[in-house]
Image (cartoon, rainbow over all chains, first blue to last red; front, top):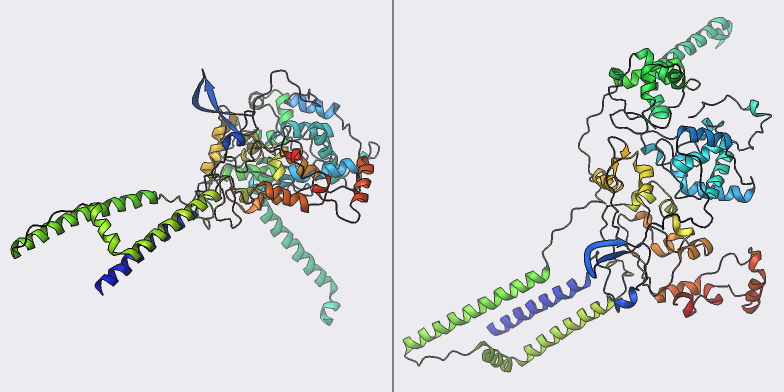
Length: 214
Length: 424
């Protein structure tokens, strides 16, 4: 009888240990990406973007890591890139407003792309209707001005602002190409003038001139 | 009713006086509150009420700096005129920043400006109370766990020591008893011999123990094999969601604030990789948003400033910069080619198809296996968009339609499961 009880107890103990061992195997460390099978095929000698590489100096691995994304060689110009010549100063802003005009045609295709781009890059601050009621605008120290108050803002100044940023707004040139920026400007005009932008002759009919924006 | 109609003049007078009074009260109230509202709408985008610079200088203690209140009034109204008139202080502060202050002459009335100045003068910073902890979906304290294997080994070693000691005690006790009863001294036997004796007398128990140990080893081997190369788990119990250098929450940014995925991952339509945003993209918003709502949020935002070299007090980039070492979550092997551009721009796939509902994730997890079987599966099911409205490939599309009469044209039907499509 005594022996039977010890047997049962020892069996239960062993069973418990095994159960713990089994369940501890099932959970995996959230920080571990798993075991790599044949890692030399997972990682090729060619550099992949957004990966870190170990820095090698004099044939020895240093503790430092290097990014695969590098600065281009000095003087490199990307395909299709056009330099923007107006400087990021108050004078450059005025000059862009006076001389810069939208090279794109105001057609349905450009407007549609402008709307898509606006929905991705502008809407969270400037709001769907351009009334500065985006979800992020409320969290900033002050909302951006509503487009309806900027009806006299020349398109060149809009382009300049998207390129370099202004006030709290950051530069969006890294996110939008020049053509895309002009498409956004087209769409902002549509938000400001849903029935079409008045031509120069009837610009006097536009209600009250808004503040001259600097 | 009748009486009212009989005395129309009195009634009109009453209505008018009521309207007049309410007008006075409402304008009075508006006047009191307007300063703050006008400030928020017109000034706050460039000026803080503290001492930090945004684009313009911070306004704390501004009235001790300016020559007079009258000067301040005229400055807000038309700063350009004052600079051009050669006012010494105006010329001095016009050099504060490259961008010039907005002229408010046509948008704000004299009363508005007075109200704003009153608001700035009377503003007292709120004393910040302790931040109330949110439901705790982020920033849960990390469990400081001891490795269970170490505990197990420790326990086993402890048991071995106890067994050895007890065996010695038992042996000497037995000999003591033998001595008392006049029996010869028992010889000490080694533990190995004793184990052998125990096994030969307990055959059934030994079999059970051996079976259990074998089962355990097989199961752990099975789990080990399952962990090779496959990061995600369909039950989402074992998914890979590494800790990132900044506790960036996609739930707050893409979910609560509904910022489009492509605002930060702007390469997705024009490049093989969707791209990790550079710090200047973070700064597009966080230049203005320096405090987090959740506990620890402000510290996490400060990490962006450290990476960008931004000095929030002075409002300029004047410190050394250092890259943020994000941990890659969705990592395809180098021997397979994958292009985001082709899937998102041409194939019109949603981000969530492969990345799961990132909008609800505080730390991003890999929820899809990213295995070849999974790729092929999708290529067999997904119809190719733009088969009808792309005139450039019209003849090719017609041929495909003739070949697969009536069937939907899926990716595999135009070579989407050829080996060299992805491996070359």
